[in-house]
Amino acid sequence: MLLRGTQNAPKFNGMTPALLLHFLEDVDLFGTGAVINNAAKISTAIKYADLEEAKGWELLNEATANPADWDAFITTVKKIAKELTGTAALTFNTLSKNIGPNQ
Image (cartoon, rainbow, N blue to C red; front, side, top):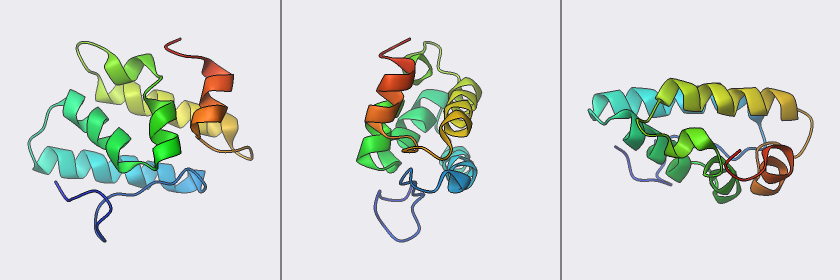
């Protein structure tokens, strides 16, 4: 996997929800290439996202599910992004107000 913050590493800042799909596809592609499991892909997506988004995504049950389910995680993140389009995007504060901790 590429180092977080480097030029070619996947990035998502939450301010452009339209780029979320590309970000998740990049994490999936790099994760598959690095032969990491679903839990590591979820952890990587959280780590590569901007800090405010990462804090929100960590609240999702799908982020800590055992066994980890990458598809469920990305489905939930995309659903929330769609619901929040036009608002403060996917920041910690917005997510916690809309879904609550570990709902």
